[in-house]
Image (cartoon, rainbow, N blue to C red; front, side, top):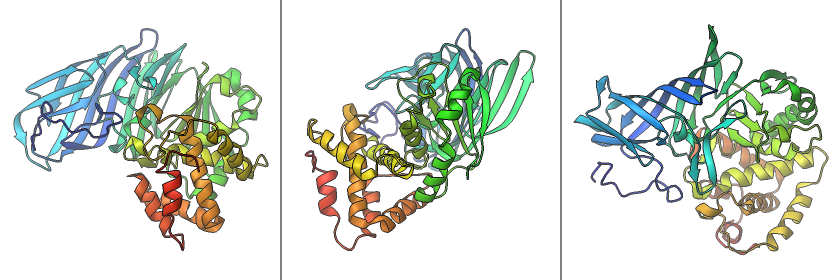
Length: 438
């Protein structure tokens, strides 16, 4: 098979045919960046540690055309040629590298980052009124750093960024260093667990930190001071939520705890990142009306962030599970039972178009609410079939066996078969592989 990027016609994922790259596997990204909030100017370098999967003389990385590359070096030598167009950075080496060779790629770049336009709206690096938000799902990572942007390509990350001192930077993993230099502060985060690029985030704002007490996992929040009282009310039950999810889903999958960011701006929907959830000021209004969403985003740390769909067609393994976690929390917290919620949403689904295939909804429908609700109903039906003891034992084995790995639907149905005395095929055929709502 030819390995030239110009001749490769294969696609890693038909839902995002232009994303992902062939010929190598990344194990680590080290970003060393400087950002100016007022002028939205990002400059710096990305050092990418990888290994070749085939003999390689040229390769590509995903990178937004809003960012200009000034220099590329590979294994300490300047690249023979590089060009950036159409969302790809193309790099050509002077000589071919053999299969299994180490790759150390350094890309120097800069520009005014902006969200990428996609089928699902704008994704990626976004300016706030005062600061920055990165919402990477599904293909927004390339809006701020060169990468192999596909969920199946997990790696470790080190993110170092300098910005004006009045702003706090929140990124994935452990804050290992914070150094003030004149009017600027350099923040360094280390994310050691394997992480998909879309789950890597950068949050910059005039944030105060709040530590949440009495949880089995270290939890904190970054938020504007003005929202502190509302936050203390709206997010008060998050420690109990964490305790309950650990009991139901198994150990929290990350070593460095969980951070909630509440932006000073309103956001249409909250979003998940590795070890972090991001909410808008509108989700923190003193009414506790967003608790369902708080549960949903926390559950993603197990379902989606740790256990990640290898291809986007299997997104029900993220959203169906996180939606069902909402129902489980409601039941546990004294709200509507999972059974009541299942009956309500089942009727709603029956009243909507019956044209969605849960196991392959298509790119246009991958974030359709029917994926979330039908996915949750699939799990509720399975729970009814297996009984609580077996069902929750299955979820714990699922999160343990595939911790920090990538999966497809067959992995889940195959594992579930071990918990049932009779074939689950009719259940899967009805819920996953037929469009009609059972």
